[in-house]
Amino acid sequence: MAKKRPQTKAPHGTNGARSAGAAEHVPVVGAREPCPCGSGRRYKACHGRAAAHAVAELVQRPFEGLPGEGDWVALRELVPAATVELTLKGGLPDGVPSVTLATVLPMAWPALRRDDGSVLLGLQNDTPSGDLSRDLADTLQQALAAEPGTPVAGRQAAPDGPRLQDLLDPGAPFEPVVHPGFEFWVPDSENATPEVSASLERANEAVIPTAKLASVDAAYWCETPDKNHLRWVMLHPEEQLLDALARLHAAGTSSLGVGTRLVGSFRAHGLTVPVWDLPSAMKAEECEKPAAEFAERLTAALATGAPLTPEERRARGGLTNRQVTLS
Image (cartoon, rainbow, N blue to C red):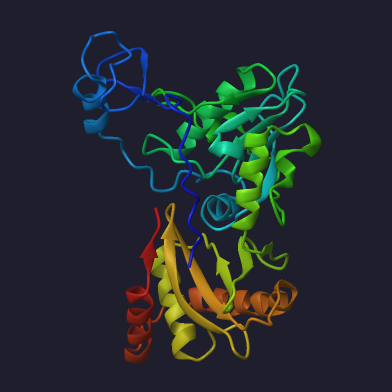
């Protein structure tokens, strides 16, 4: 139901790990290579051992408290190509005209400081700890300090380092712009390197047509060869939401119209994402009114405090059995 992020190998030696009890960052290298700390041992038997056994506390809702939490989750897990202009607390540093969040960057770079000084921050990269917000904040800080024209490597963030919630303006809007492809990578495509051009071509070939609905929050239509889907990131507490969906399902009012069907949901970053199958002819604009009407029915179902009926419990069991956890 959710897209799979492309697995792109990062440039050798660009990630970082923090050894247990050590204050310095030791770069990650191949398991059989000499450890960068200079001990003379292989990495896997030295700092790699500590990195492999380090236990990071998983933050279940890394984007909680940020404006547009549902859209953060959608851009991380569902949307192939999108950007959002970010607003920093205290404004932009000198020489940085803008900071833009992007779903994916060329060559799977965690971030990029462009030639003009602007910053692109990649959202869909793998991160080394259990706190995605802290990892992204660390990458953003590196990008703000990097030389123009420089891609930024990932590393293990300091455990007491800032999170996105510390760096971003909580009063600023979060307004994703969904793109049909990744041309936003290279405003001047004629000057793109062969590596970036090849990466752009590969990424564009894998893009699934996607659109954000305007009538409700954090709902995204996508087109696939066999059928279309609507995937809607919801902020309601999971148990309460599943009860409400079960009430609607048992009453026959959980669809978005003729030929549509609520097929289940998945969990992502602490939120629940119901998914509907749609006819292949149903486009994003045709989802707007049904989605708004469903939101009204859902609000009423969420307000119901009565115990579930046997039929509603069966409906809830079916929805739960089809639930998948992504993160």
